[in-house]
Length: 173
Image (cartoon, rainbow, N blue to C red; front, side, top):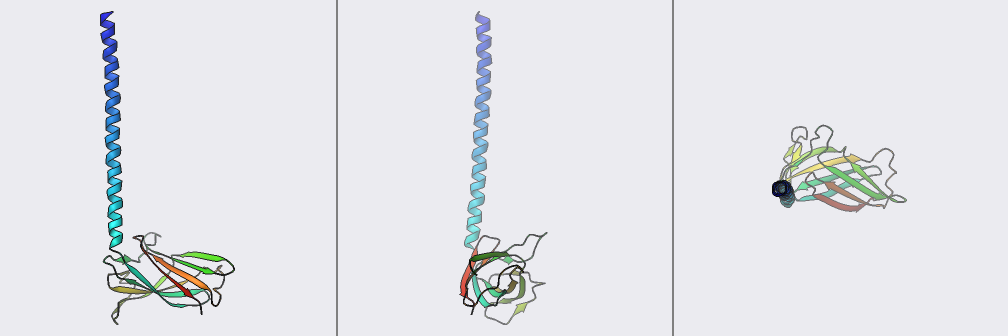
C-alpha cells in the first residue's frame, strides 16, 4: 500500500506540474502577443499624427469633380496602385432624391506641384505628394449614378492609406 500511494501521488504531481507549466507558458505567450499588438497600434497612431491633408474643391459638374489635395504633414502620400490595390480612396456623397455615396478609386492625378508655386511634376514620374506638395485630381461618378442636381449639397472625402482624411462640403452651382 505504501508504494502504490507514492506512485499515484507522483503521477498526480507530474500531471499538476505539466498542467501548471502549460497554463503559465500560454499566459506568457498571450501577454507577449497582446503587447506586440498594442505596440503596433501605438506606432500606427503616432504615424497618423505626422499626416495632415487639406482638400479644396475646384469644380463639380453633373457627373464629375476636380479637387486639390494638399499634403501639409510630414509623410509622403502615395498614389501608385499595386496589384489592383489603390493606396487612397475618394468618397463622394450627394443628395439626389436620397443620399448617395460612391467610393472612387479610379481617379486621375492631373498634376502634382509644389504648393504656392509654378513648379510641377508629371504624375507618371512623381506618383506621390511629398510634404509641401499638392495634387490636382479628377474623377467621374460611376455611369449608373444619377446626375448631381443643381444646388445639391455634396461632400468629398479623400482618405489616405494612413487612415487620415480630408473632407470638404460644397453645393453644385
